[in-house]
Structure formats: C-alpha cells, structure tokens
Image (tube, rainbow, N blue to C red):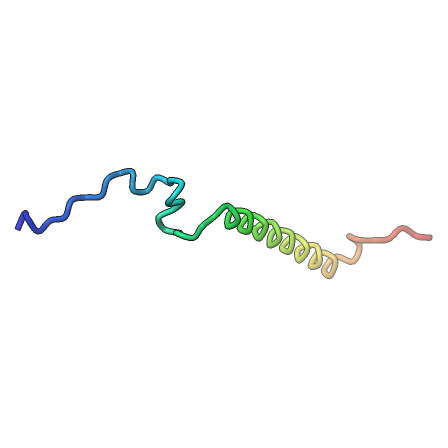
Length: 68
C-alpha cells in the first residue's frame, strides 16, 4: 500500500513566477488588482452617499442652505 501514495508537492508550488502569476487564478494580471481596488472605492463612495441621503431624509435641519 505504501507504493500507492503520491509524494506531497514541494513548497514552492504556490510561489508566483513570471510564467505562473498565481496558481488559483491562471489568467490574473495587474489589471485585476486595479479593477478590484477601484470597485471597492466606488462601492465605498456609494455607501457614504446613501448614508448622507438617509441623514438628509431623517434630519431636516442637518443640511440647510444659508438664507439669502
């Protein structure tokens, strides 16, 4: 039965190389990181805008234009 066992993979299988950027995302490039970053920023900005909208709806005195 000992001959049926396969050897464990070496530890460097997960290290990125120029030819294999990531084992779990074979088509990943630097663009993926930028797109992920920008999408997080846009979602954060949208959530802040939604929160400001709720404040404006629930508290009429919070956003007031100066008279005149």
